[in-house]
Length: 257
Image (cartoon, rainbow, N blue to C red; front, side):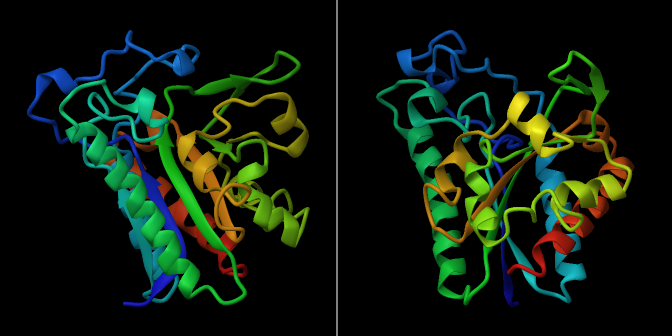
């Protein structure tokens, strides 16, 4: 099957455990570089694996049978947090199993990007990093509270630099991802570019910061998607939301890849 220049990554919904209990991540054992990191919350990303797979399958149908690349972490987040720097992602140990799994996951993303890059032509590549969030609302820069369905992160615009270089208005335009989601009556944060500058809630983690276009391949656009529990935990609602995400992602990327 022909594959698209599109990859969905999912770092936090794995269920596999490691045999050595010493590799369980101690949430109080942070290195100095991670003292301000968020605490581990293993239940906040439940069912993102299923959601990611469903989105990929539905995009394949919409694209006429072209396959979406996926890189999904299988190890439980209690042992490895694949969206952090290595020193914060695993428990220090002489047993390097967790560390090896971490590097295998990111090398897998690297291989996919290289594969897409070899076939890209003049188009762009896209990476969507799929997460869950326990939030159901956010507070804007004026203190007003807004209900949400999804939070979009771009590392303050850095991870979509390739897209901005092509057209500075495309991400926030009528054919941009946020506008497409809003047209499906989904409540998206941030709702506009001004609020993105003022409120940087979940604006992107290690994956999009590492592989986004200012850090890695110039033609790679990396976007983090944080989805609320309502659209992940119930199977029927998850399928419905996957359909919306697939349609919006495909309509967004299809003219650009």
